[in-house]
Image 1 (spheres, rainbow, N blue to C red):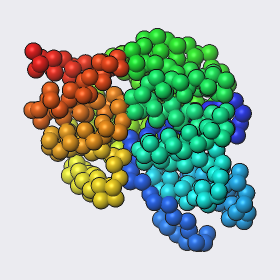
Image 2 (image 1 turned 90 degrees about the horizontal axis):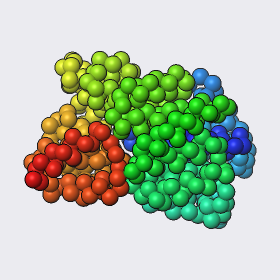
Image 3 (image 1 turned 135 degrees about the vertical axis):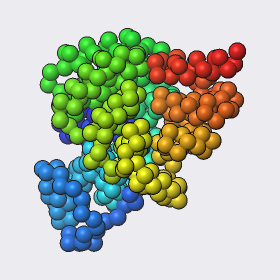
Length: 404
């Protein structure tokens, strides 16, 4: 997420914090949609899938906002719901609708801290992290007790590999957020900086104690625990936590992508097909489906490869760099173009330093035949940060053998 699953004590903020950890969007979103405001309610942009009560709520909120454009709380509620649907459905157009709804409130002389934080979330979704942090700093200068801002800032700093800063951004949540939210924020960061075992134990205990937290928050905690178990090399426990997350029946694009990666890692390709066969709208999910189809030599492989090539090309033409990690995987594992994969992996690494980013860079460097020189900065980061990941260790060992 990621991942989008944070929650705080009072209900209005708790609702908004569920969108805080969108986990950088690129894993499960397709091309970012530019903001556009329909001129009338009757204008049909595109027929979207039905979304049950959530979609009816969106329609009702839109009518309320249109009938009273000065109602700031309703406008923010609409923006939040658009972002939540974008995350849940892996559909970037909702982020475009969110930006269109938020834009009038950003044009005021002094945008509110809440508006600045939502704007930061939209920047975050596009991987424009410096711009997002700038908005968050402005928001916190106005309202230092705004939990959503601290939360989003912690996520971005963690993704950037700035673990000390991320932990410092988590600390205010001890007073501003639910115990589970604060624990997940802190243990997620600690688990990436040399304290994986203790962080896992702390989070596992917090989940066992948690009773009244909303399902979105519980799901996020379980996903985080599953990812820790994967990094520890405990596939059985990771599987258990992923299944508990699915049992909460909260649609979550990040969960789909992360569990699909887990299945791919363990060569469970048929299960990937079953999981993602109806999830082809999102580039990241289509990539994982295509990787499984390639292993099984399925007839859909050709058309899905062409679709991904076209989508990644369109992203490059728009100047959208949020998909470089996934495109690097596509180039290496589907098209067998390690040099192009390595170039994309380097660009991606310059923006974010997650474990999956390190993995594709190391894999591409090894496949390209320029391993040590191309990967040294990443290897140095892994050593200095003390990031533990059983999936990375075989790659690191290959580099050690090359160096010796």
